[in-house]
Length: 478
Image (cartoon, rainbow, N blue to C red; front, top):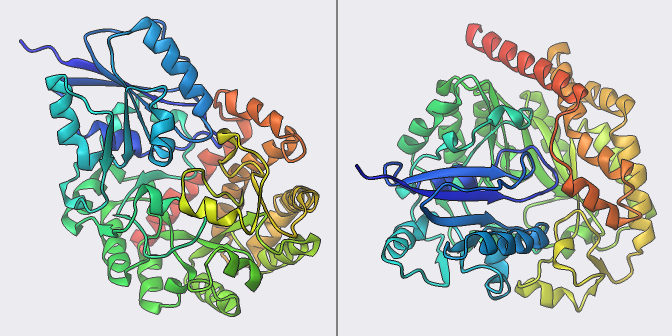
């Protein structure tokens, strides 16, 4: 009888925590279960084990800029304990800086694993692993197996309010300067087939879906067809990300409404033209259309969430007040705050050095949670003080309730709005609690802590899930 070899995969401490990563189930799906036994350790939830069962084919580590130091330390520890086992790094940082990562790993995988899976597995079995494997986005998604969520032993330990991840496309047709998509999934934009999605959606029955595509709305036809499949799947609703201009389409909005889409995240990023031009979003974001399209989407019951970039070109003290007033008045569901980041190893990082200065050369600070870059004329104190004040106001309970009433929602929909915010705001309340805006060294406290849901979050998630099931049942009955 053939005994399968073991593969151990590690996800390293990250922040924010508690979100199910699709990359691990996607990687697991590439391996024959009869030949390989995959064990996944999320170090946000558990500690590194002291012993490993053999024989071991390889150890994989998912590495981001944020977790670089942890990856180095873990790799050293594993090499001492298991000197003959190859260690593979994959994820964001190996895609950006493969040569730097090869100082600590035996193998790195750039970009996506699925396109190189067959080659990697053949080399693994022949003992001829290469140093670098680069997964091209020219690889048709129809070749991908459905993600294997069984590899996540305790999926209920993660947050449920953001939903279970689903990927329907890869790549993006836009060219925002700060975006990682052009490194991770460059050049090509690919769609999964409708037959493929129909099959994958079987595991989402009774669950809320988080479509993690960088830009779900490149194709109106794809959105409408996928919405119909989700409607048929029995999912309790979903959220997705797209450029706001795609929502200026009644057919798209009707499809989203009828299929249970409760929220679309749009990278509005700023309510200032100069700021948008500085990150090359002037083609997709037209501020004069923001209010009209947001109100149009809300009239279909589709709520809008937004990005807000900190430290963007032209940011001044009144930027925060103007943004707060706009987001509150428009009833924006939530705002994701990230510091402008130009990642090391990218062409744009070199170019932007002419338009500002980098505040650190520490790779781990290039994660959107730290002030790593300042455009000329932007004051760091203005950014941090403004961000602190914005968080305290926007994520206060009175503001959450106020925003829910500014969306013209029903009582049940407002409850869903409020409960989602109770869960989502915790990330930024932790920023304030640890004072990371003024002392970035304290971010380490957030990074090293194990993810455990607070009582408030558990209560809010349970009630939110009940509301979502109730809404779904009402939609079916209606």
